[in-house]
Image (cartoon, rainbow, N blue to C red):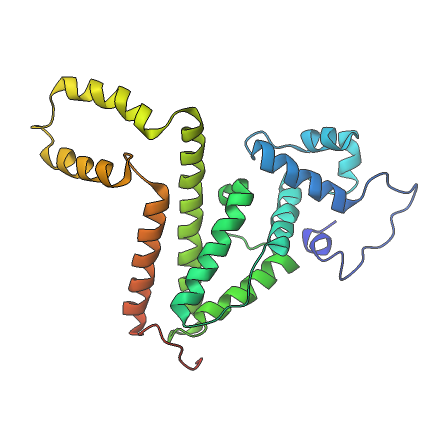
Amino acid sequence: MGTVALLWRHEHPLPARPGRRPTITLDAVVAAGIHEADEQGLHDFSLRRVAQRLGVGVMTLYGHVENRSQLVELMVDQCRLDMEWAPLTGPWAARLEQVADENLALLTRHPWLARVETERAVLGPGTLTKYERELGAVDLLPLDDVGRDQALALVLDFVRSSARALEAARAERTEETPEQWWAREGAELAALQVEERFPLAARVGQATGEAMNAAADAAAAHAFGLAILLDGLAARAGASGEPSAPA
């Protein structure tokens, strides 16, 4: 069955299937897929693994979804439908910052979402509800509608990149702290006496390490980058950050 029909199954019920009553529901398949991806990521994600989680044969899943890609689309839309958000208030910059924070929280809860790469939109109620709401942040920008869409996409793409960096940092820090890493690697580098060859790297790297207590800080980079993005949008639009009448 087509993906759009499956995505909208709760608002437009699917026709009854002939034969025996299914042992599991499509909702159960989607929920199991989300749990599998949350725990294991998408690298080895498969219908077989989801079926094992549900305690059924993989052919049972094919009675609900056509393939892995279709299931992932259903999972993406469900996560967006379930995401936590609050009403947007204030000037456009504050609204976009709120959108960024809420998306970062979503991607932290479901890290695999940041690794779903496609230029095609998921045309389900979760995605369209999210898009409609988040456009309310950029509707106050004095840009045309294409510019507003691109401004929102710019912020969301930046958040996805930050989410991947933060996930990697969390994984690394479960193995060893930045201090432990630098005590080992930094000591070996110092023994090579290469500071004179790379004076800028030595100076900036030392300043960064002292300020962040690490070679890099994904959280600090996210905050800095988001501020720069918002400043750039303000300059692009010639806006002050105060609400203006929608065009």
